[in-house]
Image (cartoon, rainbow, N blue to C red; front, top):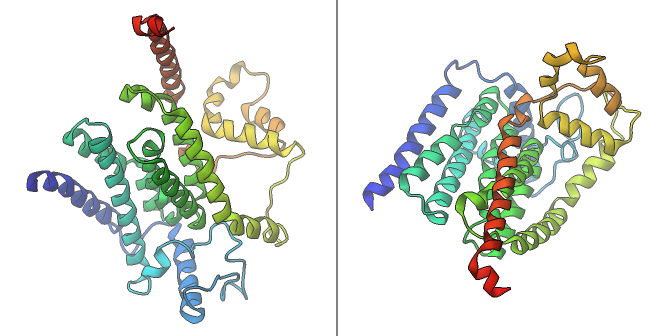
Length: 340
């Protein structure tokens, strides 16, 4: 028992030590985008200290007389970091936040493989280490994107799709995770959460070689999203009604239908429109011009690492073929013929 606990905790301690070392490697020079989040963390701290922990911050007390706070999608009041500032400096509180979420991701992956797949301790530790040290998470925390640290909560996706958890537990966990992501300014991680859900939906049941509880998943998905809507309705209302009226220097404009823009821009982001550029010599017009005409606006990638790996479409295709092969073999089995 002691040896297995040591095998679980020792890699996590080493990973957290390396993560902290990387974050402070060039201290006092830290991630460039921390200038955005540290100032707003101090701003939230001042609001909480003056108005109380249960007061919603609608406006900032600083930044030229006040700008929207709660209506701002990047507002951090309901993340855990501002509350840690009551005990630590903003930079230490930020590092503790990173360590907490890295530990959450490590534990979720380890627990899933160890207790829900039966693949063994070594596979569980290895998978947990790989997930915790993924380039997406490390890159963003090194740059200073505090709102991206909730990415590790994506590790709950396998539990929702195929696990021994009760449906009620899946509903509660899924609702709380997505709600926290939204309230902690983790909108990019929400996008990746559903993207991971879509990918694992295809090949996780095949990997585990078990029947897929489709009806249970649909029930869990629908009920949890009703709860999510109820919990985040105030945030979406504030963002949509208030921020649209707030003057800004740059705003998005398109002459194409918004639904068309949403679908094609998301597709271009996922499958990395930039891979078309090397083939521009055989296109009648530049690749960027095609996308500009389709979505009706100049389009540039904000975060290129949101794009899918080129391998993913082939993996999904393979899993679909394998799934149909399993169904085909099942139809030919004596048990099915006897049952028929």
